[in-house]
Structures are given as structure tokens and as C-alpha cells.
Image (cartoon, rainbow, N blue to C red; front, top):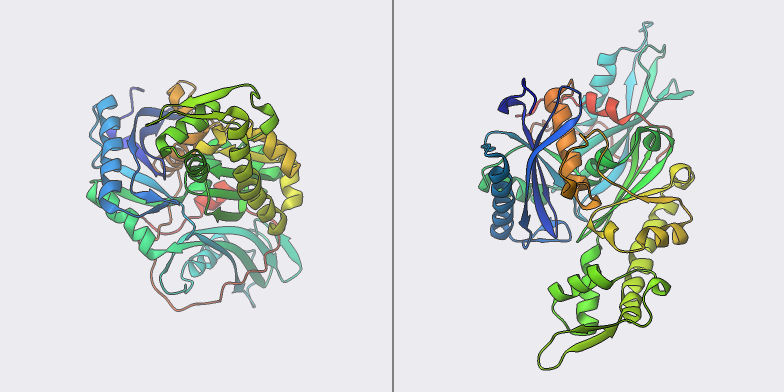
Length: 434
């Protein structure tokens, strides 16, 4: 540990997933890199499709992961700021356009004017039961003629800002907060999980040129597209790796935990990559079950190719950003990305260059090797985000302090334009955290 690092500099990330709950403790060191002090994993039996179903079971899993992290470092984390992820098919996105009128003002556009424009967007009136999770600046139109990502210093009488609003069900967000409170964890901010995964896995070049990140979790598959450094499209697909396990369990008449092991140890999503001659014997009462590796691959392929890859490709095609994705292709993260030959199948079915995302962007090389896997991309991304907020010039925006106000505009879904950088987006976060 660096000499000048105290417990006041530590932050915590919490990933409440469908298949696991992960707590990581870390900080940003003197070299500007993220260091991991300790981490722990707990069982997730109260979450389905990315949403909390059972409070008691989820709290138990959080406490287990938290205690395992404490056991590694012997640091009390009860008073440390916690950054937690949110996912689930209740997450929605929409475009929002808002105007700044400057008639009679001949001075260049000031940063405080853009900040004020952002603050007004944060007061948007939402549908009953919804809450605002993120506001992402995308582009600005000056006097209805010039489009740009940074209007500060430009002369103009009208500024139209285009933003991406990310919303979720207030009831689901409240469940997350309740579980954190019951586990004695002090939540500082709730972050969209695919954004966290992108923070840990995508390079700046990929985010600038155009790339799609696909995070395949146990209950959901999250898609996020970046261009010009900023997220421009997000979508949560309510299907993940658990459905593959359920298919295997159903077809083979075996328990789900056995099916999961079978998928990991012998499964592939490309049928002709399987061992045609390998027969797998599964112990079962009263008689063992036998299944060929080839048949197992067919079960897996049917679900992956049609429902996961097919759905993702359709969303990219319909997003309006397919040409941008073609620049740097697709990055796969999440536990589902570890399925054998998934990268090859995604590349073949979509036509985009594809790689597996490893959470290593901005981290010390000596972080635990067990964490350098795609399944921990979200947890490490949350840690990096939190470390930048706590140790840098960023001021986070949260749903906790958002004031209620009448709507200034109605959200619209006709998106256009180029986009702001993610780092500028983080710096522009307005409201202070409670």
C-alpha cells in the first residue's frame, strides 16, 4: 500500500448479479491507477433477470461478499462510500432535447450556461413509478445550423442540447437501496452496469471510433454502443446465460447446478467444434444419464445463436449506429462471455470484429488474477468509477438528491448527432451526493 494512502481514500464497489454478488475494496494510487485491496464473492439466490426478487436472500449474499472482502484486508468498510450497479429489463432509454435561449447575449457560450441546461434536463418529468438514473450529453446544435460536442466558447443565440436519459423503475431502485441499508453499506451512487463494464474494458480509441459492448450476465444481456467517447445507445435484453443452463437441465432431466457444470466443462456454442465421439455420463438416480458432447452443443447453440446473438444484432441494426459499430466491432464481457467459442460465433453471425473484454483499463497489473476475467468487468468498472469520483475532480449525479419539478420538455425518441466524451460527461455531473 502506498505510504500516503489512508482508509479515507478507500472506496467499495458492489455488483449484485443474478449468479453472484461481488464486493471489491480499492483506491486510486499515486500513479493514477486503480489498486485492489481485497474482494469477496457471495451467493446470489434472491435475484432473477437482474432484478431483486427476495430481499432477505439478497442481503445475505451481500453480507457474505462483504465479509469475505473484510477478511482479506481486515479493513472495516461500513463507513466507506459504495458504488453499486443496476441492471434488469426495467431499464429504459430515451432521447431528450432541451433549449437554451441567449437572444441579446453577444458573449461566447459559457460553461455555466451548459451546466444550467444540464440541470434543467435533470428535472424532467418522468412517467409515474420511474426514476432517473443517468443523463448523458450527446450533442449540441447552435442556432439550428452547427452541431458540435462542446459549445463552450462558441457564439450563438440558441443552443439545443440532445441528451440520453436512462431511467428505471423506482420500486426496483428502492429494493437495491433497501438491501444496501440492511447490509450496512453506505451507497454513494447507483450506476448502470454496462457503463461500468465499459469503463473497465473499453479503450479510449474504441469509445472514440465506435464500438458495441455486450455484457452477458446470468439473467440479462446488456448492450451499450459508444461513439466519439460517449455512450449513445443502451438496451437491456431479458435473457442471459441462466436460460442456457435451464435448457440443458430440462432436456437432460438433471438439476440446474449439474447442468451449469456440464455447460462450463463440456459446452460449446459451435456444434462442429464439439468432440463428436465424446459421450458424457452424468450420475443420476436410479440410472446415470448419458449425453454426447455434440448434442450438448446443439442445445447451447440453439439458444445462443437465435435468442442472444440474434437479439443483439437486431438491436444494433435498429439502433441507427451500426455503421459506427463496424469501426471497432464488438467487445464481450460478463460471465456468459466465457462460453467456449462464443467470440467466434458472434463474429460470424454479426460480421463485426469481436474480442473478449478483460477488465484492465486503468488498473494496476498486480490486481488479483482471479479478477482479470470478463465476469468481473462490472465490479471493477464500478470501483474505477468510484475511485475517480472520490479522488478526482468529478462531482457525481445521483437520483437521491434530484429535486422534483414540472417538466420543461417531453422526451422524444428521434435521435441524431455526434456525442460528448464520457470523461466530460462525468465531470459535468451536477448534484452533490447526500
